[in-house]
Image 1 (cartoon, rainbow, N blue to C red):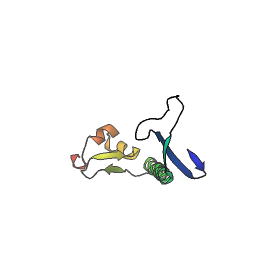
Image 2: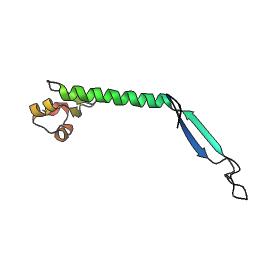
Image 3: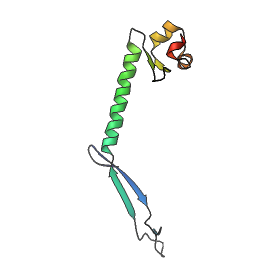
Length: 101
C-alpha cells in the first residue's frame, strides 16, 4: 500500500484475541489492523537489484576471465571468457573446487 511518494506500508488484517470478527447479525463489529513502514526494506531490495545488475554487466563485458568461489573454494560463478578458457560449462565448473584443476 502506498501512502505517499517514497513511503510503503505493509498492512495485515486479522482477528482480535477472542477471534470474533462479526457480530450476531453478521456485520463487522471489530477490525484489527497492524501496519508497519517497509520503506527501508524496499529501498534495500532495490539497491540489491541495482548492485546485482552492475555485477552481471561487469561479468559479461570483461575481457579477462573472472571466476568466483565461496569460502570453501567451490566455484559459484564465472564469466563467458572464463568458460571459454577452461572449456567447462557453468554447471560443470560449479561442481569443481579451485584446487581441482
